[in-house]
Image (cartoon, rainbow, N blue to C red; front, side, top):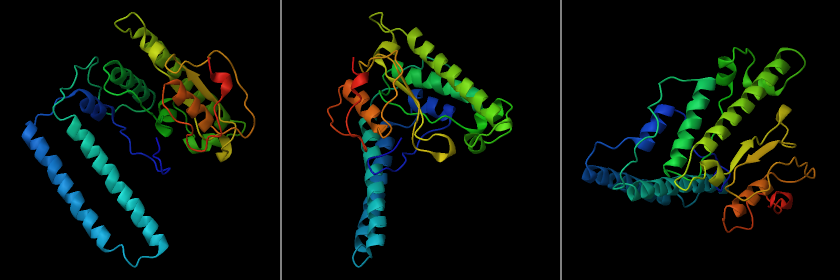
Length: 267
């Protein structure tokens, strides 16, 4: 995931930690958690004041760097506000067991899929991104090339590793979709009917940023599915994201470098 400045958003990559963040109650009393947030705010205020003090007289390059620093402070403040909003909201009962520690590769992806479904099922969140592990997946498949070398595949070991990785990705995606369909809502519909899934990459082989295959499925954005589209060469991938967002009811006209929506996806 990326923020509005194009900077990567820090994520969680430990299934056990994610499980506890979603479903484990905090043992600290409410007053102590409120005090901890207040203390963190006071530290941020002091840092912000000191940064303001040294701002004068800086070069443009240093000023730009300081602006990034200020944005980082604002991001932390936003997270603190969200933490405060959830202080007195009880955690929901986990619909799955705590993951085993130390899972890697394919097993890690499977439990992360299960956690994603559990988070959606319990309405703990309504939007998620997940970056699949590269090297550990290949290692779990007993493949020797690194994820980077596989992206520069050539006939032989690298190409065979690429085929096996892509086949495994497809199987894992199918598993995820099947689990979404099997997770029923109270009205008899499935979680799949109310979720939109996008699977793909922003980069293709040899570091190319063009011709990036993307799979869309699910009923959450009222998209026209079951078709294979080959879009004009210079179509920004953000056009797909904009179409998805509008389909889910987000009132925006642009997203990233989008130049419009993909009309062929509209149901």
